Image (tube, rainbow, N blue to C red; front, side, top):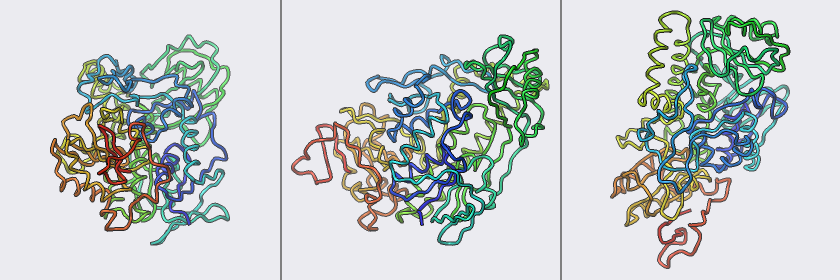
Length: 549
């Protein structure tokens, strides 16, 4: 019996598998499709934008460079060299309902807690590249991925979950449905799925056009919908305001696609041949809960919406990174009470907000005069620095802040990429999937306390290039700041936060977490060398930095 069974080997399921494998869980992934990759997932139809939040997740696990290589690194936006003094300005802002954001209008200083980082503001990639990188990493971590397996039944008791696929049964202590918008796991497990009906049917296609110049490049909202002529030759997307009337159980024909394209573009453009096409709607639905007993949901299995703004993939990756370490701690028995419940507590509001963001875009595209008036107002607003910055925060994920019960402005946010004077970066310290406590205090006052959780978190002490006004920070494995102290951090407050997120001290529970790590601890060059004579064996230090683990 595996620790965790994941149904679905898309980006979300594979990202979750990597997180669990890194934490030493035994993981089985079942995927309906017989092989990795398809024309719909490769460029150009599979082209997707990874937000800053998703890029940070890849960076913190050492997968950003492989992803850029697999993607061809054709389009990257933002980022900063490690020795730059300030984060660079995003070179692309994205769009809201087809209204493009001007990156020069974004107020970089107003973006919350940014520090220079090798991570980029955004990356244009494709689903096939994402899945390839995640599949390769999952395999190195011992994850078992089986393709061509269709789950037909799910049952559970108080101890395990069983998935049935034909004559085969697969049992695990936990099951996570990452099987997309038409999730079989969601349906079989009885999750309530509620939301709003579609306003349009969307199409994306790779086709040969007889007269492509009749379509202007870029986004164009029209009285009957919207069309987008992409940079790739013959790649066209369109949205038909038909309230989802098209029968999506059948593939769209050339004649149907041509009729829709002519109507929404108000041209007589001719499609000679359709090479590949798919359809979608803006139906916005979300499960009322993300867990039923030992079955959980993540990604599109838990929430679906219009692809406008490219939020689906990024929200799903956020789900996986949030859930992975919490489920692993539960599997290994050192999770504090209620830790797994915080997954839904934190991620359900994010999903709901993304659905509303999608609905707002659709509302501005309606052909009625009221929507037209609203669209004019929104266009004016996003042309201002405040408006552009607000929209960019939503698109990049930097707006996300979990309510962890602290008024400290860093707590609940994605941790900035703190860099110590010797060049050690937070992102490098997180590759093995553990939490990190950065102690900037001169007397290393959190050292003794942090050793109680050795194996579950890494203690690093040193002078930072920029401490953003903090004396210490505790960062969860998902990169979220769980606690932050002032220039003289309070040991008792730190210990309370550590217990809340990492369970009782390892010495008391017997669960260090060290035996469960599926990868060797990261050893940045600056941390190699002999320990000081009076330092414990697990404390390695240089002139400016000390690290446990």
